[in-house]
Image (spheres, rainbow, N blue to C red):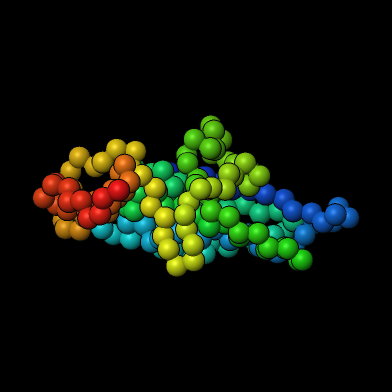
Length: 166
């Protein structure tokens, strides 16, 4: 994946070997949980897998951070799938910029699976916003967000509408 524009990003690296100590073949996929748009409504990250094929058991992949301000929907994440012969693991994870430290690189073993999200098949999890947006987007559209257990819509008018209460 080519990181669009100047979006903050991290380089994710990893190495997989077998129980016998030989380098594994396979792939690591990071799929955004949703198409991600900027404040103007332009899709900047599509919800398609970003694939890193293992080479000598290693991979490196540059991905946009999930905590970049101004991107919607807030709270999007990556579903990471590690597929090596005889095993496949999938887990949801966030990639906050702070995870990469000053080098901007993080080993896959440092990624923490997102837990506690009530996401049965076909259902999307929407975490609480850290704080409600103070104004709606310019140019149409709006923000759908959860806050204190309620579901809200904030359009360009700047007046939030509660869609469903706790």
